[in-house]
Amino acid sequence: MKISAIITLKKDVLDPQGKVIHQTLDGMGFKNVNELRQGKYFEIDINENDPKEAKEIVEDMCKKLLANLVIENYKIIEPQ
Amino acid sequence: MKISAIITLKKDVLDPQGKVIHQTLDGMGFKNVNELRQGKYFEIDINENDPKEAKEIVEDMCKKLLANLVIENYKIIEPQ
Image (tube, rainbow over all chains, first blue to last red; front, top):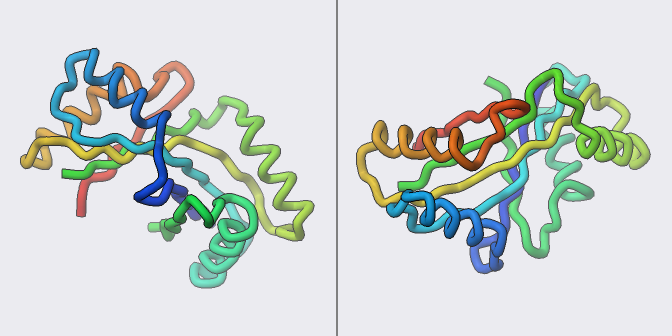
């Protein structure tokens, strides 16, 4: 079963990389961007058929390794 | 309007970073991961109220800057 996790910086944490991309887009003519923030995305193929169980395992992974909870949030996207 | 874009490596492109994370998870006791692939995530706050128009602008950004279409795919997530 494939489960995805999205890791984003918390709202108040500066995102210099996103800012540079925003400026670059602006220079390319995309003038209507208010804000751009970059995050990480993980697609995890897990050997577990119960969606609830799989979600819990991925949540555990996020807490223990994938996300730095001091500055980042995680969101788990369940399989369709 | 906030729109998200997910950039992933194409299926046949090696993902060494994902592989290292996979191995690390394995070493931490998460033994049931078949595959883990890492991607990028962008959350774009765009000054455009028409969802269809906003989606098209973000798609254009993906093609021109955010994704390297030789090795990457993009997926746009419309606002809820």
